[in-house]
Amino acid sequence: MIKFVDLYEKTLKENGYKLTNQRRVVLETLYNRVGEHLTAEEVHQLVKMVNPEIGLATVYRTLQLLSELGLIDKLNLDDGVVRYEIGEMETKHRHHH
Image (cartoon, rainbow, N blue to C red; front, top):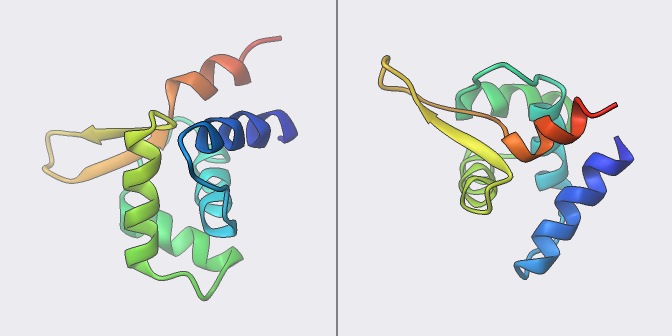
């Protein structure tokens, strides 16, 4: 997972952001659930297991930022609920042998 973290930290730094603990936990949660389409609320419930103090608003802001930077994909499915998954960039790196 070190390569995964380094890849995202580099992208964040290039755009003037830091890889905060909250951002790291959100990214790791999505990374560990690759292929799943999680809502912000589902991400929040999962990250609270690692970081109980993290608030839903922080998760929303983090997801928005990561989506804008192309690190995660924001999906608008037919059910009208916005969902998120790890970005295609990471999927390509993860499956590379």
